[in-house]
Length: 137
Image: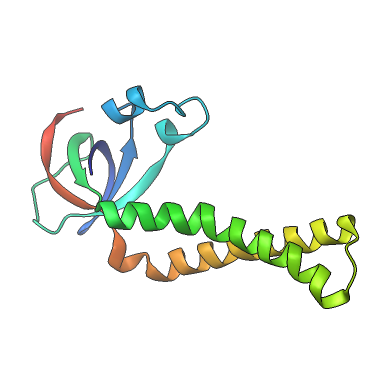
C-alpha cells in the first residue's frame, strides 16, 4: 500500500512524516472516527533521496505488515478477553458475570500491553519506506 505524507523533520535516514488528508482517507467509511489527519510517524529513507522539510513524499507500507499490525492491535486483545472471560468460570467453577467481565478486561488490557511491547521492540526493522517525492506540499 502506498500513501502520501509531508516531511515534518529529518534525522539522518529517519524521516518524521505527517499524514494528511489523502485519497484513502476520502474513501474510508471510518474517517470520522480516526485521527489519521493529525498523526505523525517515522519512515526510512533507504534510497538516500535529497529531501527537505515540507516535501511531499510517497511511502510504501507492506500489505502483510499492515494486516499483521491490525490483527495484533484489534484481534489479539479481543481473543484474550474471551479467553480470560471463560477461563475464570472454569478455574473457579463459578459463573459470576461481574467477576468474569473483570477477568476478561484484565485479558483485554494484557492483550493491548502485549501489542504495545511487541510493536515497540520491533519498530526499528519495520518502518515504512520512502519510495520517492510526489512534489512540494
